[in-house]
Amino acid sequence: MAQICNKVVVDQPESVHERVGDWESLYRENEKFVEYGSAYFSQAFAEALGIVSDIELHDLERARLRLGTIATLLEHAIQQYGAGLDADAHTGLEAFHENRLRKIGLNFAGMLNTLKAARADGYIVASDDMVDCLSRIFSDEGYRALMDHYLYKVRIIHGLVSDVPTDVDVKDGTPMMWQELAWRLTSAFADAMAFGQSIAIVNAAAYR
Image (cartoon, rainbow, N blue to C red; front, side, top):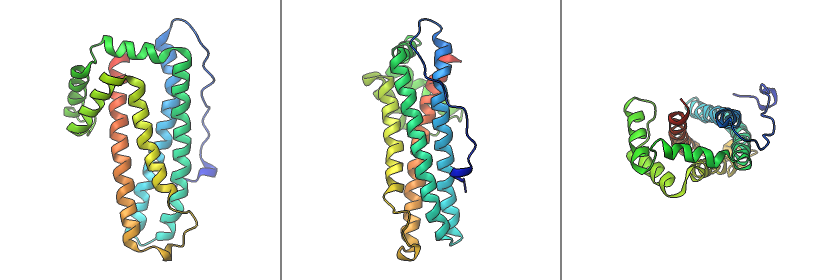
């Protein structure tokens, strides 16, 4: 299990100040926030899979302890994602990035084709409904709305683990209760990860 108090501390991105030009360099600088957020999210997902293992081994006490770890990791992820969005808005990168995506043809149909091609190549496992949803959100509301929707999914997962008191006595909960929690958690994580990976595919199309 990941130990929050002993985790490796990485250098956080410095505050990004308004600048003109060199947008690609600025994009890569601000992308560090997303990278750190994704790292925390992935660690939390691993802990959720660990809960599945704990349940199979009838170690509910360990499963309970993992919940606090997941909550803390997701709090860090949400903070990093939010800092990245704030930096994008402050520097003007948000508008530049969306412009760039639209200039390479990522309207509704372009987004749809890009994501379906990525899925055919095995890069994402997004369903037809998710691909359609991503394409429609970007077409109608823009890139920021895509990220807001992803963050909403991450916050839902944080809510799932936060609703279970970390001091709950495992004897008070039935094995089925824990099994249902594990199913809900892993399903929510898989859904959010597929959505986030799809956004990453779109970004890669603009800067590869």
